[in-house]
Amino acid sequence: MITAGKYRHTYTSTASDITPLYRLTPNALLMYFQDSFARLMTINGVAAFDIVKQRRMWVITEVQIDVQPTVAYWSEDFTVELWVSELSALRIYCDFRIVRRDNEALLASGTSQWNILNLDAKRLEVTDFLKERLTVVPELMAASHKKVRFPKVQTYDLQMEHRATRLDLDFNFHVSNRSYVSIALLTMPEEVLAEQALASITVHWQHETYLDDTLTCRMARTEDGSYLHTLTNAEGTVVCELISRWLPQPATADVSEVLNRDL
Image (tube, rainbow, N blue to C red; front, side):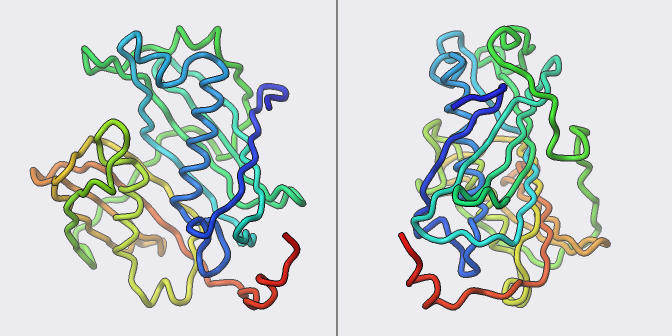
């Protein structure tokens, strides 16, 4: 449903979408937001399967998500509200919020940056052809659309390697953007996960990787208390950067309360 340029779609959470603290997982937040984006582009005739006929492809390059301490249980409905907030010469900015359907309580909100890639030239295309298709709603969920500057560090606190498997791939046979996030967050220290919950995440995707590629993920604690996760390929090229911020865990609902709720 589109109202005043904003698209809304309601989903039902599954067991794999929920963390032990009864929050939507980072993977679920990304998945449902991107699904809503695809649905909105389909309505406007510029979905991936539409523009591939002109040898074009959608590419997401950046996302920022603020996560609220709002519970979300298995099999409950939540709604993604999404809109195009800005069209620049080469970039499409799409903002979103995710709310519980029953009371509109905010679960998460954020902004994202997309580009159109010419598959033959391997270069970004201008967004002129989208202006007649997409309605721009200039409401921002972040302070601005200014490019995020990731901090530079001299040393890392932890390093691990991951070899890309078929489970990491998307329908283009690339490592999916959600897989990078899952891999990066594996470097979070157990003592942090035991006492803190994810409060925000900022991701910048830079290069593609493929099946059997080896990714090296390094994690460093930054001066402001957040965590920088840097993924590089075998050649040492940075393929993805991620900043995660964490806050003390709020009280967790008793499991009997969860199981006895009305469905």
